[in-house]
Length: 372
Image 1 (cartoon, rainbow, N blue to C red):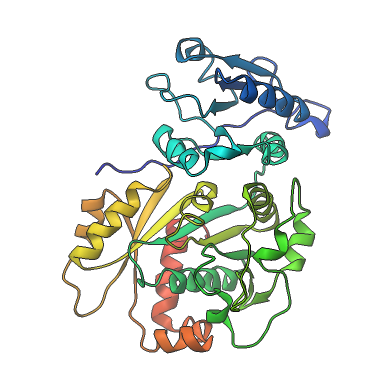
Image 2: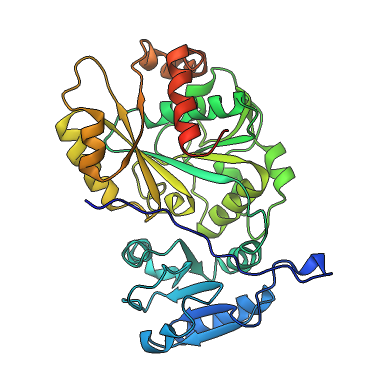
């Protein structure tokens, strides 16, 4: 399996000298390129780009798109497109219709798109994304963690990394990306903590004030978190537009956002596309490693590192696993006695203070540029 390459954002603009409010406007010479022959997507893109203050050039097919593809600040691709110009950079956003469902994310993976915008719900998000992409400070880094198999401990690793980053003075948000996981907050504390949870953002659209977003969330262990409720009551997931608004507010409000992706479509299928980097966690055993390779195939095309959970009974060397999967070895999660009980009792933060955990977390964060 080939090594996965890091995604690079293309700045949408340069600042206009003497006009600090125009720093995000697209350059007249390039602007935004849309590759699509779908009239609906063309009209929506035209309206959205105009709202963002940019200029749009539309190409109906690959031949038309070749000229100007690499010079465009942002490349948008419609869901009617199945191939891209050869040897060109990946498109920035895949545009699709609300009724196209999970097929949009599969198509985005095939095309290598960085983001997915479901129209018309994500129109406000896309306009803001086009504007923010040219900002000198685009925002915090989003690091996603996904288990290669069930029960490998991705949530535990995510919590320990958030705790370690916060201890280094990095403003950190931990996001629970698994609505079926029972609520990440139950592993953090056995006491109720005031603040908003995922269902409270169902009606969110457009821009969320980052300061208000940060202050509305619960915090413990030095970091802020957004969790699914740890209750038995049924909850409804926010739609794609609300999730996009939340992730943009997270970027603008925190230096580091760690996402516990889970292994379902809510996390891997959607939130993974907002991640700048990913960490795949697998046990050091053969069968889980094979399962992890299949999970890897479904991840977005961003820089991905391998975490290995090893113990005295491990049968496969972590470095060999990383080489076999075509990934960089990011770290080995230590075996800590009492993790299962700590998860049930809301005591994982206590275990995170152990020296071996601190060494593991510090190494992973430094390798991923989250701490100096």
